[in-house]
Length: 362
Image 1 (tube, rainbow, N blue to C red):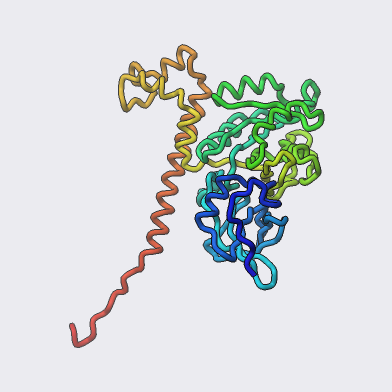
Image 2 (cartoon, rainbow, N blue to C red):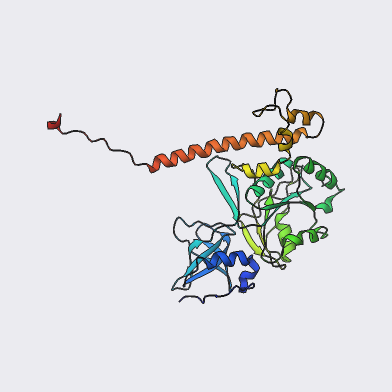
């Protein structure tokens, strides 16, 4: 039995209103909609099924064709089976996708799709890792997602449990990452949570990124005003979490937005995120324009704008070193991607069979 077709945009289409439904989703769906189809949003990807939000609530969904592989956050089209269940049919085009490189070098991994804002979460109960935060910001910019840094657990400030102070964290981050908002919060006292509301309005989707134990799940629970995600204590000594979140779960919050809680990332390998790198280091163009040689490598060449900026303090050494490291890493990843493409093309090209001549043809 086909489901009723919605002929006009409804800003509140049942339960989907709480899962990021907006005008953009409506327009993409209108271009491909058919009778017998139903629009859903993927809330979780299990080993052999999906959890999806429908206009009437949350339901399980069976996989579809092998080439239809949605991730959490995807808007998908499903068919209703005669048994009453749902089967995955197709996905709508994505507006964004947070992608990281696999540490093994085997390709890229889509973490979550159709995200508007990425909250990069870091707890002050652990050593400062600006490099990791910077990588997540670059991945976000490269994916067309707006990154915001959230410093959690600020209620620990001034106690022995605090590994860094809030002001010091601001200074270190701003030396490396330019033009990014930093919001200190506490889920215990509620301090700073009001500053997150501009990113949590109706129709928006927000993803939380960061290490295990940084406070992502606790932040989701506070914003959702209920315990929707399990939380755990961090280990003493290194303050690492115990991976209480093992899947990427999309949950609604009372403000009308949808939040994706993600498992802690042990590593952040960079794909060929050249757009995000250029966005993060746009200021370097000014110094490079002052180089005397167009192909300046910024090492021993005379009249080098980068070396001059380093010498007079306009460019922080750690910022330049971070840029060089990331650029080299992306060059390696680009070479790996080319090699993978060659292997795929080689497998797809059928080999010619050698035909041996018959005895009387010699």
